[in-house]
Length: 394
Ligand code: KIV
Ligand code: ZN
Image (cartoon, rainbow, N blue to C red):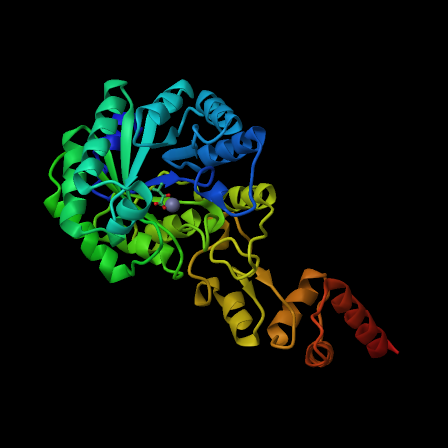
């Protein structure tokens, strides 16, 4: 089935009856707000092309009002990207919306804070002023033919009746998508599930519901998945979870959980995940932690003897998914936790049919090295093998 823009806005359910989940990638906007990170327009374009290749539904290309370079990036990305929707962040005012229009986007991500603390100390606005500002901005953007995604910033610390009132007002003004922003990451899964259900049953109209989760308590991905399970149609995320403070929900993790655990449909081409993760890591100059889910170097690596034995008999024993599905590969690592199956496997890979005795002697050496606090390199392994083969034939 081919998705056209209007269908993507209106229908979260595919004809097959399998729920369809949308992804809005904000690596190039919220992700670039990572302290110390600044990308050049050409670098942003390369990442945008990778995101399009990955199959994200929307690419939040940037915040055109922030700087000339940012404006140029958004304009360049809008011109080049054809498969994904390109969306620009904009405060709820005409000047920002005009700047987004000048950057040639067809979709705008409007936001305004709805929590008392933000309204009082940041916006210095009353509740009714916030509603009026949001409605005017949505009407203005719609009058220019833009698709409108509206985020209530700090939604999760907002008074619930007021949040519903804001959302209902912007839907009545024509907003296509609503986004619950967990701006400082205070949700937990059962709580956001409840919030999604309350918003869906109280805000009437034709809109898609999204969530935007930050990772301040390490629950951004779990919260996004829980929100989707509860009925949210879309999640925002960034590749590798880059973003302000502890970062945003990692898009590759949400998408993998949605597809491989919940069994919902997405447009993500999962085998491209590793490539886009590497590109983002390189341009952001932020290494991917080895134990990071899905894309970390250790995500599909096995050292312990029991695990390797299981993996070599049937990979599903210790792998939730086949690593190639997300562009990764399996690694058998040798170290002091290894067992004879790993050594046998490594020797066979080198074209050696080892005797049981040779395997045990090599294993002994490997464990000795590990106990001395050293990690085993491939060069160490080859040296040990040579030494033991030579002593066997001597
Ligand atoms: O975290 C946040 O509240 C945001 C908004 C702009 C949606 O990034
Ligand atoms: Zn954010």
